[in-house]
Image (cartoon, rainbow, N blue to C red; front, side, top):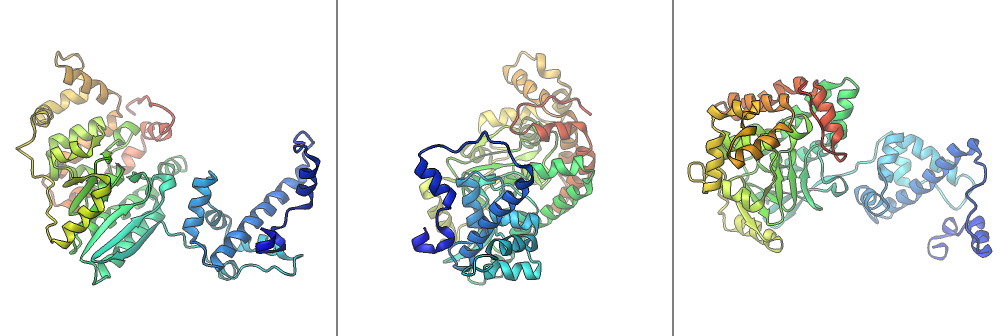
Length: 434
C-alpha cells in the first residue's frame, strides 16, 4: 500500500518489529487507562481520513462504504454514521490532529467542507434512478434487513417525489437490495421511545410514515412493489400501497406485530381488510401467520408471482404492455376451500371466542391449534387490532388509518409492548395483558 498510496500507508515500525520477531503480541501487559481515549481517537481519525479520501476520489458513496464496514467487517455503525454521531466538526478535528505532523497530508476536502459548515454526511439509504420507462425507488439498507427508521422514511418520501416528477417514468417500482423487501420498522427506536418517555415521537414517526404511504397509494402513476424477499409489518404495509405487488417465489410476508406486543400501524389493519376482507385480516394479524408468495396469491394479497430470475422481466412487461391490473381483493367470495373455511371461522360472531380462548378445548384441530397460537399474543394488542379493523372497515382509507394512530400511545404504554419489543431476537415473550 505504501508504494501505491504513499507514506501514510507504510507499515508501522512496531508492526514490522513484531513481525520480524516471529512472536505474537503480548496482550497480558498492564493497560494504561490514560491512553485508551487517545488510542480510540487515533484509530477513528485514521478511518475517517481514509474514507474521506475515498469520497474525494469518488471511489464510492458514504452509503456504500458504510455498508461494506457493517457487512464485511461486522461494525455496528459505518464510518460515516460514526462521524455524524460524534459530529463532523469533531471528526474533522480528529483528522486534523492526525495529519498535523505529516506535511504531505491534509484533511480531505470533502470532510473539511462538511466540518466547516457543520453539515452531516448525507448517507442515502433510498435512491431514485430511471431504467427506461421505469422509475426505480431502491431501498438499500440490507445489513438491517431494510428496516424503516426516520431517515429511511424521509428518503423514501424524497425518492418517490423524484419518481413522480420524472416525466419519462411511466411507472414507479418500489424495490430493495438484499434478502428482505422491508422487514418492518426499526425496533430499537420504539424501545427508546418507551424507555425515555418519548411516546409522542413514536406517534409522530408513524404519522409521517402514514402520510408517505398515503402519497404512494394516491400517486397518479402506476406503482409496482417488487417483493423479492422478506416483507414483514411495515414492509408488507408498504407493498400494499402499490397498485400491484409482483412477488418472487422466495418472498414471504406477514404481520408479526401482535407477537411483540403491538399492532400494525402503517395501514396494515385497513388496506389488508379492503383486499382480503375483515375475516382473513383478523386471522393474519391475530396469528402472525407468515405467508408464502403462493399463499398470498391464493387469497388475493399479492397480484403476480414470478420465479426470482424472471421477476424483473415480469415487472417490465407489465409496464411496457400497459397491463398493470390490481388483482388484490379479486378472490373475496371465491377463495380456495381452505381459505374459505378460515374466513368462516373468523366471522364477527366467532371473534370473542378467539379472543377469550374458548376454542382452546375445541374438538376441531384447526381451532385448537389456532387458539394456542393466538393465546401467545399480546391480549391488548389483539383487542385493539380487532376494534380498529371493525371501526375502519367502512370508512375512507385516510380516516381509517387514523384509527391506528389514535390508539398508538395506548398500546405503547403497555408493559406488554416493551416486553415484546425487547424480546425480538431473544426468544418468545410472555405477555401479562397489561
